[in-house]
Each structure stands twice: as C-alpha cells, then as structure tokens.
Image 1 (tube, rainbow, N blue to C red):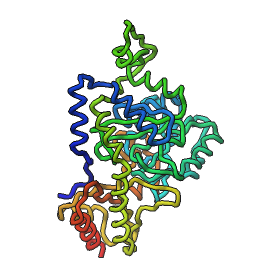
Image 2 (image 1 turned 60 degrees about the horizontal axis):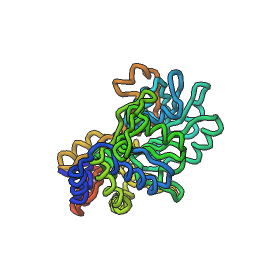
Image 3 (image 1 turned 90 degrees about the vertical axis):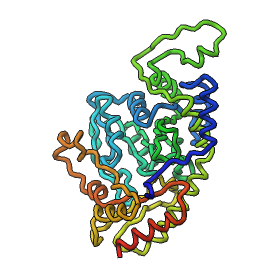
Image 4 (image 1 turned 45 degrees about the vertical axis):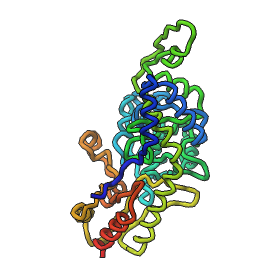
Length: 375
C-alpha cells in the first residue's frame, strides 16, 4: 500500500532522542530552548514558544490576543476542526467565511463582509501549506482594529513574498504532527515579534509558573516559584525538541524534494481538463504539505468512486479538507449556514500521496492509476 503520507525520520533523530533520554533531562529544558531559538531564526521571527501541539498553540494565541466570551473570530470552515475549536476554548464564536477555490485559503471579500462590532480577530489558515495573502489580511485587520492570528499548522518552511511563514505577523502557530512536513511525534510552535506575548505564552504553557524548571535547576541559590495566573500544561518535552532540532536542519531539503514530486504531478496531470491543480501565485512558495486535486463539474467519475478505485489499486488517498460547520460537533449550531464554495471544494477534492522518500515507481503508479481513471 502506498500511504498518503509518512514522516521522514532517520537515525540522526533517533540518536538525538537517545542522547536526550540518557542526559536525564527529558521534559521541557535545554533542548526545548535550543529548538525555539533555532526555529525563530529559521522563520525570521524574534521569538518562538514550543508547545505540545498546534491546537494548544492556537489556544494560547487566542488568550494573549485578548479573545474571550462574546467575541467573534472569522476563520474558514474548510480547515481541520482544531482551527474553530481553539476559538471555542476561550468562549468566543467562530464566524465561518468562504475560501478561494484556487488555493483553499480565506476569501478576503467574504471576510470583510462578515466583520461586525463583535469581531475581535481573523484566524488566517495557510491551508495544506499554500500561503495565504498575509499582507491583504493584515491591512484588513488594521483597518478594523482586529488581531490577526495565523494558523500555519501545515506551513512550516513555506514562503510568502520572499520570507518564511512565521515572521509576518504577531502570532503564527505551527504543527509538528506526523502528517506535517517535519515532525516531533506531536508538538507545536508559536512565533511572535511581540515580547509581551512571548513572555506571557511561556508563562501560560507551564501552569502560570513564575520560574521554569530549567532556571531553578541551573540556579546556585534556592528559588521558590509562584503561580501568577491560571495556566496550562502545554509543554513540549526535550526528547521531542531534540528530534525537532534535527528535523529543522533538513527542512529546506525536504521541501525541495516534496516540490519535485509536486512538479511531476503537475506535468502529468496538466492535460486533464476536468481537474484543477494547485495554484501557486508568483511570490508564494508552498511546502506541499499535501497535494490536493479538485474535480470539476464535468468530471466523469465521482470523488468517492475514484478514491475507492485508488484504494483497490493499493494507493491511499484522502478526501478534501473538512468543512467544520458540517461536522457533528458544529452542525446543529450552524444548521442554517451555507458555504457553497467551501462545501463543493471539500466534496470534490482528493489528496494524493506525497512524502519523502517516495520511490519513483510509487510516484508513477499514482500518476498512471489516477490518469487512467479519468480517461
């Protein structure tokens, strides 16, 4: 079976984890601090805060941005459910906006139309690694005095106008889940250029503790910690961070390999008129965390029939990105909401296998099988 994705982990990551385990420091400590410093440098941000996953990164970002009960946050419904959940966690309401079907990212005009007196923030998702138009949304947010938070769960290593995602706005959240381009097993990171946000997020991720374990351990004097506000256990372990450091070292190499596979798909499928391929605008560079194909109305076969035929041929695929307002946890509250562009993109798109290393014969099998199904 050709999988839809798999992490690229080598003996270097295994040794880094092994050495960290034997060091005796396995929870949040020196390797986490090193990972944060190197990730901030990679993205061009001033600060980075490592956390347990991207969902907790989004939650902390909501808190420090001042989002709370009674507020509204505009976000796409076409995104993994954690995007909307993070808004709910702070008692605010997700307001779902449409996406642009060319790149699955938020539609600027629809977002602008949904801003009200209750709107506190815009949660901008870089869906499946394709950068959204950050500058346009920064301008819109500034015009209405809103916070802009980036959900870059899939976008580590992607670039926008010559700069890595992570340096353009005050709060950018990343994921290191195994489906992502680099992985720490699970884990997340928040980048920011705001020192106040940085300090508070470091506090919140460790129960609101005034002095972290590493500082107490390294001190030559007795230190007693205080707990300054309600906090959370959102720490990343040093074992995970040690793996993350090694993964970060090869991130650009991994992305270059992924982009070569994506280019092979582009060339093989460009002559098929009934499908739409990923659209990468000038100045935008995707890490191709996923490769999603949209089936146009004149496609002779249904999405589900194609997926089943691919599975029968030994190839895993996935449906397009979910629409949160149609998931069971949300559909009662949003029963009257219709997002035809998002819904159609979800229902008519297929994600094909893309990972490193992917053997040439597997790439060719995916191409041949998918192409033959549409002829």
